[in-house]
Image (cartoon, rainbow, N blue to C red; front, side, top):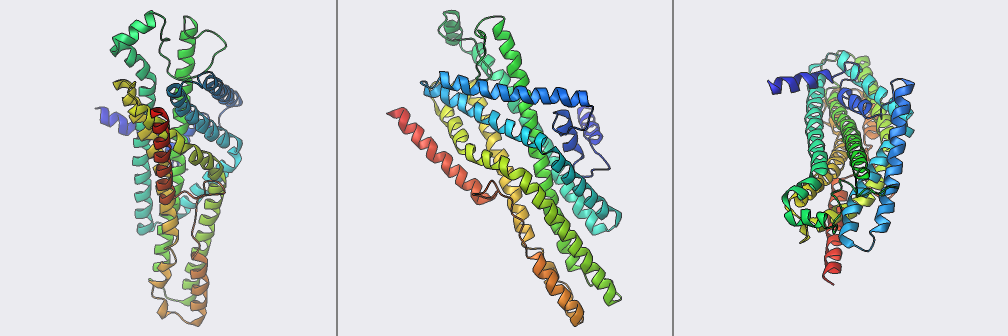
Length: 404
């Protein structure tokens, strides 16, 4: 019964006008990033986005006040960095709303062009990458929901399971449990200020988690699209001479391959220009964030509930980074293989005129699509490995500092 309801709900997220991006666009709309609703709705969400900026500033203020306590600094820093990333993704999408809309429009138009051809091979590849994207998207959304749930629940689990912690709170040694680390212009250690801070933390945590979930899966869906369309283009090249009765028919197929490749280069270029600045900030901060989480996990003062939260949080962070690096790497690898479709075709059957066109097409297709993370690095599996190495180096440094 529950499974049927879930399937019915996911089917409602589909959009015939946006065959691939339907669910992610509805997710973006839900959290105020896809601003196609009324002016009032857009204004309300922009106010929420602005409050996110104020909340991030309050987290840095709190970080300054606890600068002498290394454990509190690490705990605050891991959450503050995540908030900064959420803020960057949110504002980059809202500020470049026009470019994102153009990109979505181009992608949906290209997919509808391919669907109208009624080619069973193209349909098979499109269904494959669409199904893959749906599985990844819904699994990631569930993981983010669980992480946010644990983020909210963990402080209260510590209070419920630790009698010494309860005693410290009664004696005034420890403050009441807080979900996030932030500064307030009122006393948030006593009622009613405490209740107000908890409400703010729940709203900011849920909004930030939602923004991360829909932004990341929208990006992964677009990378899956680029890879899938490259596979389709390669197969088009491989079948250039199938069921061909004249030279003009072959030239028309070659022209279509040029058009398709130009479209994919255009889509990748726009996507890279939108994603690169945000991913530069993300990659820059990721090593320290993962390191801080691992240090907290190995701390002797960490309770079982805190370790559960840190484990879930770190797993989510690593999987998030890996999704970007892996799918970007797949796009690059697949784009390097497209021109092989020409050489595996029956090119030897063609005349000199067609062979010249094939050489031009092969040279044009030998253009790898690379997604950048700022001006200094690319999104790839080697980059992911380097970040993990950097995290381990930071962890070793912090461990030695704590021992000293």
